[in-house]
Structure formats: C-alpha cells, structure tokens
Image 1 (spheres, helix red, strand yellow):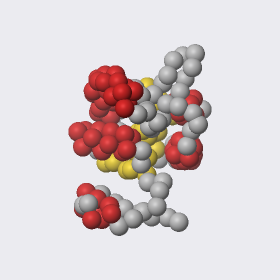
Image 2 (cartoon, rainbow, N blue to C red):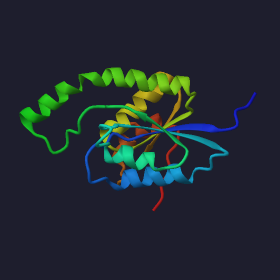
Image 3 (spheres, rainbow, N blue to C red):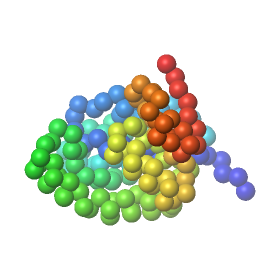
Image 4 (spheres, rainbow, N blue to C red):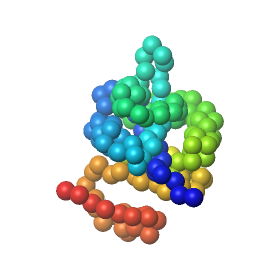
Length: 164
C-alpha cells in the first residue's frame, strides 16, 4: 500500500522578534506545498497563550498546518558570560521536549524533518531525523563554501543543491 501524501515537519526555534528571512521562507514553503501531495507540520516554541512567539504566530497563520509546540530552550545569541551559562542550564528541559517531538515524528509518520541553518535548528533536525530514521533537510540561507566539503558534509548529506 502506498501513501498518498509526504509528511513534512518544519522546525524553527526562533523565539524573539524580529523574525528573520528563514521564518518567512519556511512559511512560504509551507503555504505553497500542495496539500494533495503533502501533509504539513511545524514545530516551534509556543510562548504563552497571551503572548505567542512570533514564529508560532507566523506558522499558525499558514492554512492547513499542524503546529506542534516545542520548547528547545532560550536563544543564546546576544548573551555573554554568566547570562549565557544560566540560560544554558535552564535548557535542561530540552531533553523532554526532544523526546516529545520524536513521538510526534513516529506517531504522525513524518517522512522529512526540514529546518533552517540556525545551529540549534540544524542540530535538532539532524538528531531527530537520525533517531527516528527519517530524512532531514537543512535549508542553508548563507553563502555556500568549500569548508563543508572538507569537513565531510558532502558525504553525510543525502542530497546537496544550490540556487542563486
């Protein structure tokens, strides 16, 4: 028996404004995927009911997307020294949320985990894909250089493509 739709989980952990182009691009991709061929899911930090994160709000506005709340810890960019260390310690609950996200991937039979190139997003997407046995796409929004080839990235990738 063949499945009629490919199930894709888009993952983004941005919690603070302003949103970058990555959230806009992921939202556009989610919006444009034909629902006859794709079942679209999104995983992102929810924030609170009164103050959802900008990413949660953006993904929730995309029609026919199942948004899965997942808290992968605070953003560490812009923090230094003690504040960064304390924020990292508060991130210990991330293991629980990673487990919950893996359950979503298995329960909803996700085929592809898609993230952007933010280090945390890419690391979580690769870890999630490896532990659940699904494909992973890391969408790179920066200039592509030869360093990824030297570090073995080409051998680890299932596919590489580029657009200008």
